[in-house]
Length: 192
Image (cartoon, rainbow, N blue to C red):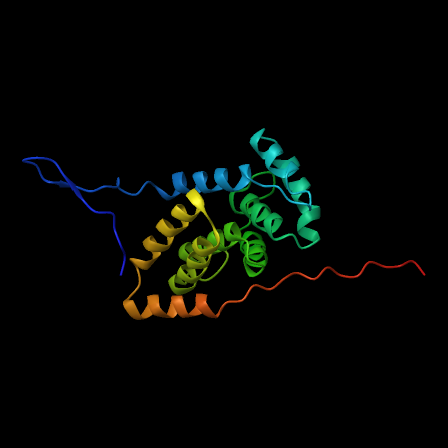
């Protein structure tokens, strides 16, 4: 069951929904990216990537994120996946984007989880699977806050509109059983 905001009424007029019709997916995706990249602060040097991205230097943004992703940084996986999905500074490649999103999502990054959910919804880089899309979007919404959470909930609800009740329950069960996998860095050679 989906809870909707209460409708307001005007005197002598029809009920007016308390929310506007859903904005196109592209607009919401841009808002999610903006919210996600403006608040990045990580000890693993992910911050220079978004700064270059906002300046329009997409190739540099991708280069700045790559070392962090190679070290297993979940946020870097999600941000780099976005660059591959949309061809910002790297060749557009849905398979690479889905792989990067998956690696970040498995570690618990809400942005990567949401983007992986949208990839399952569209069938880009992964087989189209609305139940898995629901699972990942549900997890993203649970781990995010503020505007990100609201956007992820809208995405999840849009996917839920394509599912039966049993499929929604299956997606919820998958989300409840999910446990984050932490990346363990490979040992560095000692040079002996």
